[in-house]
Structure formats: structure tokens, C-alpha cells
Amino acid sequence: MKQPKITAASYLGKKRLVQSGVLALVAVIYAIGCFILQFDTIQGALSIPKAFSWLAVNFMPTQNSMTYLPQIMAKLLDTVLMSIASVVVAAVIAIFFAILGSKVTGINKFMQILVRGIASFFRNIPLVAWAMILLFSFKQSNFTGFLALLLMTIGFLIRAFMEIIEDEAGEAMMALKATGASYFQVIFQAVIPQIIPSLISWILYMIENNVRDATLVGILTGTGIGFIFDIYYKSFRFDAAGMTVLAIIIVVIALETLSNQIRKVIL
Amino acid sequence: MLEVKNLAKSYQKDKPALTDISFKIDPGNFVAIIGPSGAGKTTILRSLNQLIKDDAGEILLDGEDIRSANKKELRKLRRQIGMIFQNYNLVERLTVLENVLHGRLGYKSTLAGVIGRYTEEEKREALDLLDKVGLSEFALQRCSELSGGQKQRVGIARALIQHPKVILCDEPIASLDPASAQNVMKLLKQLTEEFNIICIANLHQIDLAKEHADQIIGIRHGQMIFNDKADELDQEAIAALYGASAAKELA
Image (tube, rainbow over all chains, first blue to last red; front, side):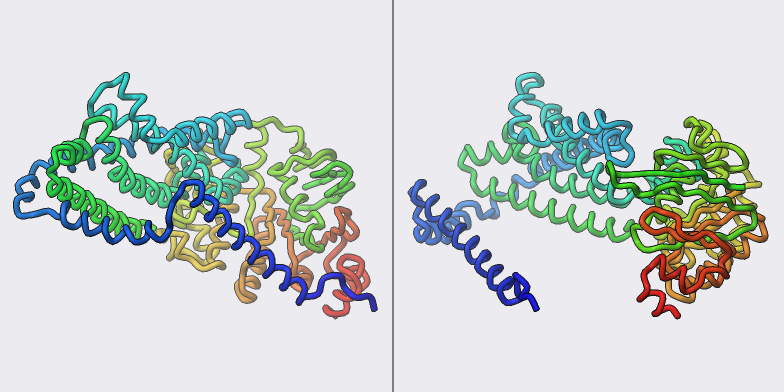
């Protein structure tokens, strides 16, 4: 009998060799990177505890920082509302484009490519860049922050919604098409009911995400929670800045818990 | 009567998926299409309601050519052709009743369909059909809460409410346990006779095909190599379709 070219042992041996090779390659790239950047791994690791203790000492909110709390909460509420508003508007726009551009509901090839292009354009310009660009036209205002969040969120949601439609709606769509239903009937009777849970799940995620991002946008556009963080920080009121960060963390965790509960109910 | 003449389709150049398929089916007949995976069974079925555009041939339903229909005519023809699927293809989030009523969309104006406005008569008929398939007490439950066999019966009710001349079943029992599979096959057979319609099912189970179908069409490599009464499907024919070892196993 002819011997097969690849035995199980030789195949597995080769696979091990490849895996070790990849690991070694990653290590070499890291070493080269450290050399070029003159980064000392050991010293870097040692300075982490130092950084944290500095943070703990300086950023720890004190009794005194409680007086800032009403101001922080008011700004935080602004920020949360702004991110909800930006996601809701973005979702409405994104679902429209996602239906036009997805592989299963898309009207034609040209539209699919166009929508994909628009989505990746909005998504791949960093949020910071959006904020800076929009700052020129709309000055320091809540609207600038809203718009920056909106544009980036549209980019993300178009992409996410298209994938949801392609994954979840195809089968029910085909069934309704086979009954003789028209395009709009299929969209409203099959596609939208079928994808609503995933849609809401993404919307909730983007709201959490935008509260975090709004901080950064706020620093740049001088609005919301990011703005007062910036003020406290630059006037060396580190305890108040720490308080702000703490408040953001609590709100984001609260939102996350809340949206997980909502997901449990709707899914 | 459904008449297929010289149907052909290829997905890639020089690699025909179907060549020269021709058959006739009279109302009241339950027809099983059998053959190995990849033989072209699904392509035939989906050509019949033009979910797949074939390349050549004729498909006549009571003399009307489905292949040459324009968009609007095709919608009208499709509502005479019900379809049920291996994965049921229901809108899982909606209720059983709403899914059955989807079968009426082809008869509605776009707006009435979009907002889901159905007449009292349609709702009554949907409930009657659910009764017929044994699901009357599930009408207001979400489809996601049903078992596989129950979902498939919702699919059957959705097809029936179209008042179809033909029902196409794409592997209707491939995802079901043996008992549910038997039930669905019996139900399809019974409804075919009761409503005097044509029912065409792609099947992998030769024994079930022989037990329930009136007529069997055998496909291999995109060619029809058997088309006769179910009783005529003997060892030799099975061997020709699936190879000698499969025939022995089934004997």
C-alpha cells in the first residue's frame, strides 16, 4: 500500500512548529519595538504601582469635593441626555441606510457599495477629529458635541444594522417574498419585527459607549461633563476631577446594568 | 396542472446544476423529489416560484408561464404558490396568528400590508386553518415559543391561507424528530387531497417518500433519472440514484 503523504503525527508536529514560530515572531517584534522606542519593559512595569499611588493620593475625592457634586451631576445629566439624543437620531438614520445597503434588502449593487462607503467614512474618522472639524463651524456648544457623536454613531450603527439584517432577516424575508408580498410589506412585516431585539441591544450599547465618549468630546468642544473635568484638572482641583471620573464610572455602570436588564426582558 | 418543460440552470459556466428537467403534475397529487445532496432538488423547487431565476425552459401553472411574468404578474403568481421551508422561516418575534396572516400579503395593497391590516374574514380563516393543523390554542403565542413540529405546522397554515394551487416544501422535515416528521408528512398528504392542490416536497428520506407520496421524481447530478408512481421506485432505481451501497442499506 502507498504511504499517505501526511500522517496524523507529522501534521500535528507541523502545526506545533507553526504555532511556536508565530509566538517567537511576536516576541521578536516586541523586542525590536522596545529597542526602537527605547522602552524599558522592567522599568515600565515598576512604575505602574507608582502611577496608581499618585492617582490615589491626588485624585481621591475628599469631603471637600462633595461640594462639587451638584454641579457634576447637572453636567452629567446633560451628557447622558446628549448621548441618548445622538443615538436615537443616529439609529433612525442608520436603519434607513442599512435597509438600502444590506446584501439581502439592498436595492442594487451600487447602493450597497455607496452605503458601505458612507458608513466606513463616518466610522473611520476618529471622534476627536470629528469634534475638531465641527468646532470650526459650530463653535463651542452642545450642538457640536451632539453632532460629533451623531456622525460617528451613524457610521457604527449602519454597519451593525446591515450585519444584523443579513444574519437574522434573510430566512423570514424569503418566506414572505414567496407569498407574493411586495418589497415594503416584506420590510415592515418580516425584516423589522425580526431584527428589533438586536437593534435595541445595539442602541443600548451605543448609549453606554457615547456617555464615555462624550467626556472626551466635551473636553474638546467645551461642553458637558468633559468640560468641567477639564476645568477642575487644569485648575489643579484634582480631587474634584477625581470625583467627576468616579461619577462617570458610576453612571456608566448603572446604564450598563439597566440596559442588561432591558436586554433580558426583550430577548 | 403544473407543467415543467426542459428546465435548465447553471450557477457557473460549463457546470450545469439542472439539465433538461421536464414533468407534469395534476392537482391532488403529492410529489416527492429525491436524490443525493447537491443534486439540484432545491434549485428545481425554487425555480418553480422564481426565487431562483433559471436559465431556460418553461414552467406553466394552469397554462400561465411563470418564467415570463413581469414583477407584478410574478407577485400574483406567487400568491398561488405556497412555500414551506426546512427552517420554517417564520418571523419568530410575531405571534402564530400574525405569521399565518402573512400568507395574505400578496392579496393586499402595499399600505394595508405594511401596517398589517387584515379583514375579519381573513382573521377567521387564519383561526380555522390553525384549528386544522392542530394549533388553535397557540394563536396568540409567539412563534419562538413553539417546538419545531409546531413551527412547521404554522408554516403550512401560512401556505394554505394563500389559497394556493401549489405548495412547495423545501426539506420540510429535515429538522424534525421522527414523530413530528411523520405528522407533518401525514398532514401534507391529507391537505393535498382535501384542497385538491399540488404538493411538491424535497425529501431525503426515501422510506417516507414511498410511504406518503403519490409520485416520485429522482434527481442525480441535475438530471431527472426517475419519474413515476411511488410504488415503482424499486431497488434498481434507488441504486441508480444513490449508488448500490445505499440501495442495499435500505433493502
